[in-house]
Amino acid sequence: MNDNENTIFDCSRGCTVTTDKDNQIQCEYRRGCCKLETYDYLEGINQEQYDPYYEVRFKNTRKGIYINASGQNVKMGDMVIVEAQNGHDLGIITLEGPVVGRQMKCKGIDPATYEFKKIYRKARQIDVEKWQEAIAREQDTMIRARQIAAELGLEMKIGDVEFQGDGTKAIFYYIADGRVDFRQLIKVFAEEFRIRIEMKQIGARQEAGLIGGLGVCGREICCANYITRFKSITTNAARVQDLSLNPQKLAGQCGKLKCCLNFEVSNYLDAQSRLPKVSAPLEFEDGLAYLVKTDILRELMYFSYDKNSLTDIYPLDAYEVREIIKMNRNGIKPESLKLEPEPSVPEFVTSVGDDSITRFDSSEKKKKKSRGGKHHRKNGPREA
Image 1 (cartoon, rainbow, N blue to C red):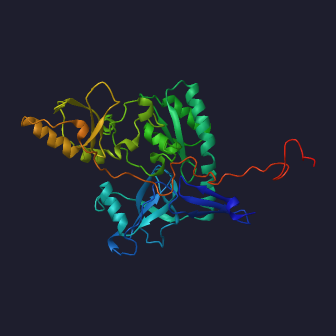
Image 2: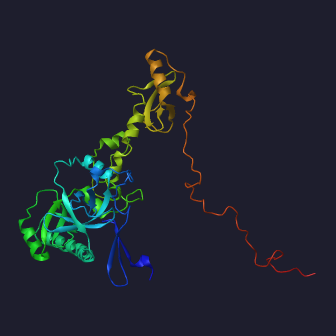
Image 3: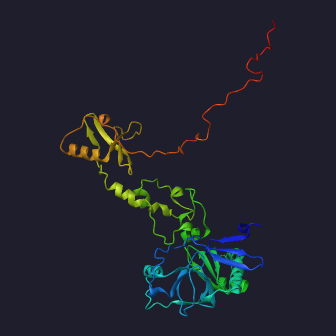
């Protein structure tokens, strides 16, 4: 059997799980396999004040800073047993050294006053096996939890379940529009699963990040790939980019406005700052020209003599429009919009012809061969 066929890629925790010949489970840290991955740009730099601090990552939903108070020999990529609120948990060390100090500063953690949880020791084989047994229960537990919530008539949805490393506790991530009474639900969960229960509410964007999927662009949705901090998105971002305010096109899989609407807003605002404000039609000798369309990024403004028609439109560069407005203010009218030279704007040209649907067709046409050869005639050979 191929080694890859016996390997499970757990991207939610950023590790690979394999089973050796003795049926022992082996877990190894796999860098870049999780959206919470952080690049260590200070690797190789030594700052002793940050030596006891490590970043420990759990499931794809959380990670934290822990302290190695006992001075054990642990390093990045090790599976470690750490302190939990009740019992202990198992996580993976993903950062060490001075970059952890930058992470603490980013999260507002002061090492002098913050109470860090401890790293107890490296995980043993029995700890890893128990951890994998708890992970194997997560999918069935989530399905059963959804059934129980539906039976109780609660308006909520269980999005994900995360078991603690020792298997004695589980975090139920849920999404709900309003307030939910968990008193009866937690009792049923405790009797059904025989574990301690923690309910944690998440938003629609976080739920989409947990489930994953592909966007209309054909790539993995951003919230599942790399976004961890969700910023507020308004329809003003669509207006700035001159997009149609169609809820079906602007909404993502979570039902909210797409996160990618914020990606290019700054470029559009910068381009709009160089466009003149046209509050009235431009005056030419042969009539008034009305603004009907604007290409923001190319900084082109299209004008027409008929403000209700898009058939005969003429492009003008933003600089030319600004000059014509100045001329109109001084009482000067250009001769005609039709005589204005076309603006020279750099166009994007593909080098491989990706936009052609016939790029895979053969350029030479195959010659059709006749059945009877070159001298074949329809009525057969002519007799002498």
